[in-house]
Length: 350
Image (cartoon, rainbow, N blue to C red; front, side, top):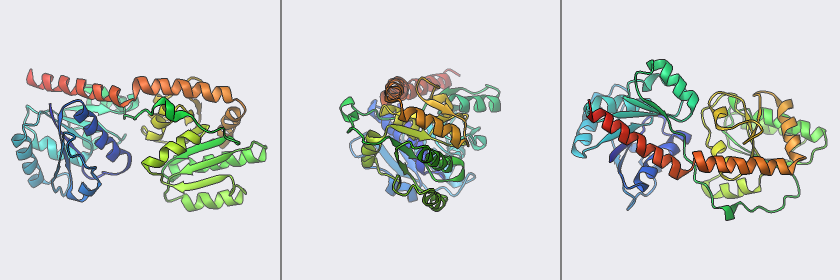
């Protein structure tokens, strides 16, 4: 297959990483991939020399840029593209106008805001909840498949961690009001007052970072709670290896990579019961699930894991097995290939 893989507009964070991973997984399976991005995003693209991925830049001024669609149509024709994957509303609008009827345009939905993606011929949804939203909006008239984000599962040998002298809590999130990091700080304050020894590493940054730091100081937790900022890929090994538990505390979200990475590293997870992310884990099996915006319940779950190392290990072992079976690169790569072929065949049979 020759796949055109494109993103415009919101080409940041998890969406950007998922777009790159989609192309990489398909190229690894022997398919030809053309990665289409705006010129201003070209510097963020890895060096794909010799990896079966061609990078093409094309300007696009918005959803109704007809000149961009004309140029994209020429690209699809000249490159003999078989199928298009578009990861943003702007890319879908441009490429749906550009693609001939013989080339299906697939929206890869990374957000619950699906309005601008509905023109696509088919949908890849990263969670079952997102598929429900798509099916409700289309009346089930267009194909929609659940294909999760992918995670690279580390080798077993990398999981060995030093014996921590103190229970270690990890979290990684954009520090925005809806991410629940303030609830985690309050829960850590409760642990401290109740005599539970711990240290915490809360990675990330954002608009409430200063307020969180001020609250940590008010609670007297400066020596126990650390804010390293965003950590790079080569720093994640130490972050996950050293943690006893990872906390996902959002009030609303889609499918944060921290959940999948936590599973891949075999870590006990505490996750909030919110639509989308909660489809990734099961209470008492692969995680402890708590209501959002509830520091008391979060603190209780942390205390339970701090006092039960066997439970930490059991949750982590089950989570890793689940990640290997459902989220690993080879599993998601095979799912992408299977469903793209199905859509190409379905289009050709019309």
